Length: 143
Image (cartoon, rainbow, N blue to C red; front, side, top):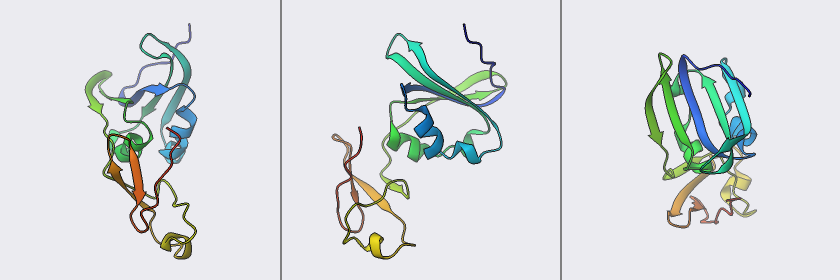
């Protein structure tokens, strides 16, 4: 049995689809934080079969919930303070995401104006469809 010590203060990202933890680690820029991060891949899960878990010993303020909600709004965020779970945060699809995905339309203004923010707006919540704010190009995700 693998033993990874508990967290005194920080957060645990649970119910991550198996194999997605390293992408989430990069997308959330957890490598830029000066804190302890544990990635558990392919943990047994009665609900999912296999899942990944990320434990981070850092204040929750360092976590971008919009990016996480965009990646997978089914992930559970457990907030830890004083060695105990004090809050379970439910994620939702953010209304817009900024500089997370790039527009693929070669004629979009963001292709010409490099310093312009890449902004995608949620246009269809049921089908989880985002469109470029500038040219309406549909984001074809890997969901």
